[in-house]
Amino acid sequence: MSLGKTTQTILSGVSEFFGLDMGTSAARVVQLKGSGPVKALYRYGQAPFSGTLALSEAQGDRTRVAQSIRDLIKQTGISTKNVAVNLPSSHVFTTVVDIDKMPDAELAKTIHYQADSYIPTAMSQSKIDWAVIGGSPKDPKKVEVLLSSVDNKFVESRLDMLESIGLNVIAFEPDSLALTRAVVPADATTAEMVLDIGNIATDLVISIAGVPHLSRSIPVGTSTIVRAAM
Image 1: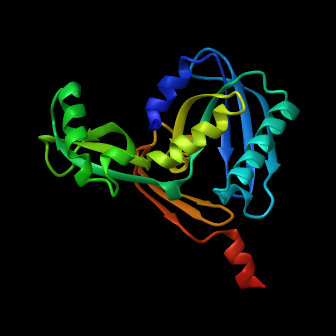
Image 2: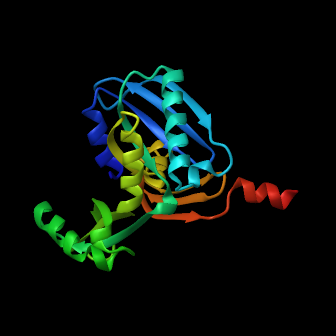
């Protein structure tokens, strides 16, 4: 799993990859080309999922989802197996914490030992990633750290499904963080709110100077709005 600039660093070193967004109603793919941080759009497309297929944990339904993704890759002519994959915000916990300033190696150990007090699931059952986002506005002796966690079982299930169709997953990134990087300018100096209304959920992100500080997934989307209108 990767956060913000961490993801950009990972992908800037990969000459060919494509992005896969696995939503609740469709899968979407985009392939970029280029060796530097700025890449060119090469291929894109989407394939709808029927009903609640994407939400099912049944093995048969997971196989159907995998086959839909395989067919989509073939139809769009994507030429690489390297893929960066989204993580739905409803499965990801993200928070900002203040930690004493210290060398990166010590900071990593501190976060590892203290993560249980920050995240809602046990460390043994979670994958975490973090990034220092700047000095703390509350205490000059501390830094703000963006911390994100996701349940092991969910990530490994998604990884197994993608590897079963021959894909090489090079990065996972939470929807909310990817969305912020995509729509908020890197040189932003003000606070911004990003609202992404999906089919069954809405992601809300508050960013300050281009860095997400608050991320929430609200279980209300366009399907709820349509039902209310009807």
